[in-house]
Image 1 (cartoon, rainbow, N blue to C red):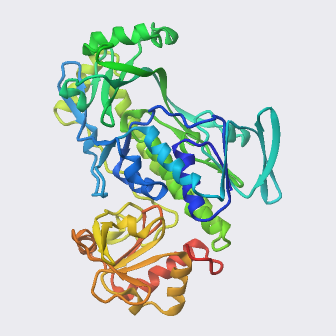
Image 2: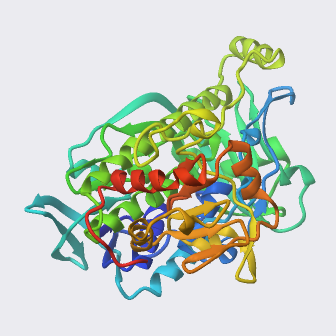
Image 3: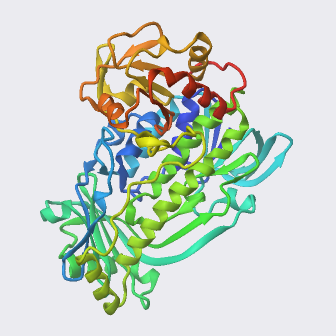
Length: 517
């Protein structure tokens, strides 16, 4: 298995597949991790996925919750709080300000413990072609060209993806292209408390925003005007001039650690793969930053496809399940891209007349609220979408604190990157040995909320009532989640549980018993 690119998406994929026991080779053109903050935000769902890829406490050691992300007009009146997108409790803050190098270093540290993962940094991929049942890769390192063969390739090599180009895949461009100056700094002294907030000023004269990065760093961004030269705006003198003008910030306040002009764009690969090669992260999709979902989406990509690669590589499931990757992820990403583009247009309103109308629309609540992220409509999920439970099949359920075997913590910490079946009573009471054997071979963890655990079934003490309340709210007796924490489906009653398990087996195209993970 080959992974191209070692940013957040590639790192996550390498860690998950490596921990599942597969031989993985990583090809990354840069000699070291980037080491500077590009990504500054993750949501609670993404934190859950990262907890499978690394020591999440280490990764978030310099993080802080983001309570709000408010868009203001030129007069400082609030328009919308993007931080209020509806979400369920994830066991982490809904929005988190993070220091990207900490997250990348934490995942890399986990990957380096896996002897089955080989990392080629400072190595450029120069060729990719399909052969009989494999993909041949050519890579250049220290002036020498080497070749290797891989069963599958996951291209997570960024917006200028070599993998995407080699596969001949074009991108659709929705026409959003705006230049913004990005300035990251480390604080030298205490700054105004307002800098602890995340604020976006949608001023036609010049849009600008700021946010904290973790606990002691600060990001400032400024829209560039048409006549402003990119190279000139990347000079330190330009940074200090604009920081003084808008924020009264100077060299005594911060040390600039990164200054760069970005062109925010919104593009989607027309296909997310071809044959045995697949795309993820920025190689598959780029979006404006106004939802803070670019890297989150890439990490979801990695978590979505890694368990499918695992089952296919083990020979346990049909390779057809890999087709569900784009089927599930593309509509989800498209929904976020549309919302991010809409917010981008709000933030990049250059006409005062249009801004006046925009402000009135928000003032009189004529702009619809941002909806929650959509559930999967198709893929490896239960077919029955009826009733209260059917509406959320393919979405992410909440996470709560539980006690299992005397150990208390988040449920994900007990389950790991696996399937999980949580029932109001012991599932072994209604599942025959064949179905139990299938779940065991799948690596699925079985839980009961009642005091009737038995061999292979663990008791959950639902300390916060999250799971018992969720089952009651959906009028079901059991739920089945996938390794990427999405809901496969529900059993309305315990007697319906065998049918749910049979449907999972059929959806996976299950072929034979596999080693339990």
